[in-house]
Image (cartoon, rainbow, N blue to C red):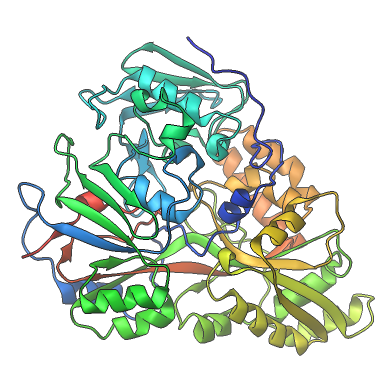
Length: 540
């Protein structure tokens, strides 16, 4: 039994300690314009089923990898190191393709299933997790998957400067005494450990031994594709792993072509120079739906657009003002006018599909009369002046959304100033708990990356919103194993959010992916940034 070097939880993402402070944490915490998906209700708009059948499922996957799949990719990866991969541009390339976790989400659900692990189990108190590994798995460099290889990856992820260290319990002990069994033991319960392992890509021990500087420039895992090359501002190329255990890969090569402009990606898709574009904007999707050579797929995500209040700032510290704003926002109108009807109104701090999701009893219907009454009772002179900040990195169409909300609340006597700020300044403002914030709120898309109430367990809202009332319930949640008791705590937390309104959930973000009809076997990645291109093939 071996214990990794002692560490303290990273200041940016300290699970159970509530400290979150880096720009990367902001990108991950409130999104980066990229949603995290789970398939639940069918959304308004064009029928998914009819569009898929229009393309048709043509034939069967080839016996050997064939063809090149060209994917329109929005940005350069921040790093090839999976332990610091916060952004969708990195995760969507590495996860499920080059690197694999011990577990993964079942397609279309938030339930986990074995990937590198044959099976797993937890002690009743969630302090010990046991993963039984699959036999015969090899890394792309020929190294054999065993418990020692897994231990070295978990130790690597446990570094203080690894942002995703929050996925591993602080002070965890890793047992690799049996080559076929890997155990994680912790002093405190780790109820979300199974879900967290879906995001811990197991790295070749030979690569880990070369150190951080090498890991961030290349990638060696067990996945269906091998890393070939990365050319900045141009492309990332992966090639089929001929030794993969299956299913797939069915294409010989995947080319992620880096095209930052969303309209340019859509144009490239129409022209046939690329085959697949994930995360198409609702506006661009309108034109693409009419192209008979294209298939449009969409699914609701584990991501929500929302307004987060700074509870210790004057004006936003007034509950009746927050309640009035909530009643004054017409969520359906926002979805219809800005999202082209794509999306569903959000009712809880958690998106549907995340562990423990439940609609709170306390709701805020669109009611201008009620909103005006609350403003009259709030004790502040009218009009009430407030300011909301945003940055393009925090989500798509936030400017339009914020200005629309400003127009809505003006009707009830709230003058809401909308201000764009650099992402760095927003990060400093919202994560520095020692300073008086000059703004009342921030707007962005927030993703729940691991299918669990992650940003409740980390103290995210305590730090960003100053929501100190969350702490007792949060501490109970992180010390309770999955089951009826924990589900009740999560439900109580959602009700507390609804009553106290540290944030207003606006709508669940819907991911729209579009591909050419020759692309077969593709499904919108319901767990977020993690498509499964190893199961995709090209028809003749």
